[in-house]
Length: 216
Image (cartoon, rainbow, N blue to C red; front, side):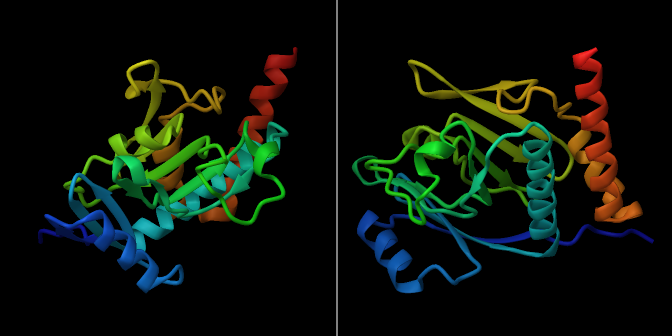
């Protein structure tokens, strides 16, 4: 019997959409919706996350929290915060975003204004059911330094290169250089067997072991 993998996301792509229509839809639909929008050069993608997508997103979020905790890094999470540049007509809502090195600058804020506030230090994108839109030009316009992109099989990390403002792949996260990127898909699979709590506990123990080795 042949089994097929269920969709992890549902996507609708609309073309020839004006920036004004995009922003009007954002305002009309509000922040309580489950869909996530991305806009680039007149193309609007509306993505509805399904079970695998959301489970993966939340588990990676747990991994990041464990890393930050063990490395004694303050973390401020803004989830699917809309990141947009009106002058460049680009905007997107990531699956998750984090302030880490810039956390002190936004620590006391409940809302972010990219006209005066820095962009998130890290954005996470889950893209298991392939998107037609490459969101990297959007995040480059906003100035996000680091992107994690998980496609259901592997985790890729991209860093923003100056002065060209393009993303280049890297084998190591600048934010969390301790992390072996190959561990992330392995931990996701392990969580489906051992459960998330046990897997996160073993991940925490691994980090502590690496830190102890580094201090010897």
